[in-house]
Length: 226
Image 1 (cartoon, helix red, strand yellow):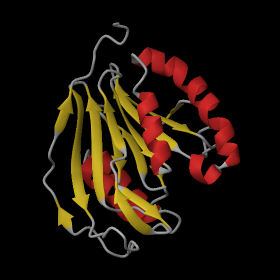
Image 2 (tube, rainbow, N blue to C red):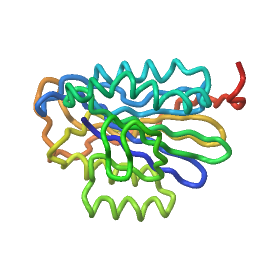
Image 3 (cartoon, helix red, strand yellow):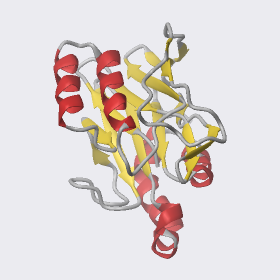
Image 4 (cartoon, rainbow, N blue to C red):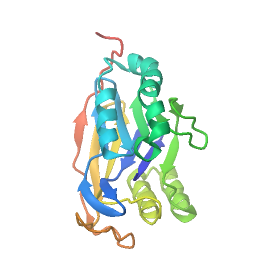
């Protein structure tokens, strides 16, 4: 498990993830956890076992349009993963954050386990979701920055707090993906000095600030087009 954060504002929805793939606190791989689905008009971020995340990201992309996804995803993913999760919760505990734009920005959370306010195997509306918890100070700072429309700095404040969490590892690099009326774009926020094969030192802060590089994908406007 690592970081998965959703922020929905009046003009855009944002998804913030890191890239740490760890076992017992040791960084084994750098792996992107956000995927773009322009044919669905969404971006999705995944939190969980790396192999399960890859399967989930593939299955999500098989829906032909967003209407089919909304109708089918809860039933299909419950059928596929509910029993597996009961047998191997350490492997099949996962969260999916979904953001999109359909006249207005929206955010959803879909999980294989009940989260506070978010029942398992349902598409739950999420306008502000931070996992793991970032601590009161970081959360309050992020809220202030969000109110000032400074989403990038708010995202970094949340990630800084989450990096100190003891039950997960946040690291590698930070990525923010946004969806608005113009489409989907994703950019790199920062990196950490974590080394593959070594235990992540949570006390180290961000060491390389990067100028955002943007990849854009237009949204398919007609959701019901064949």
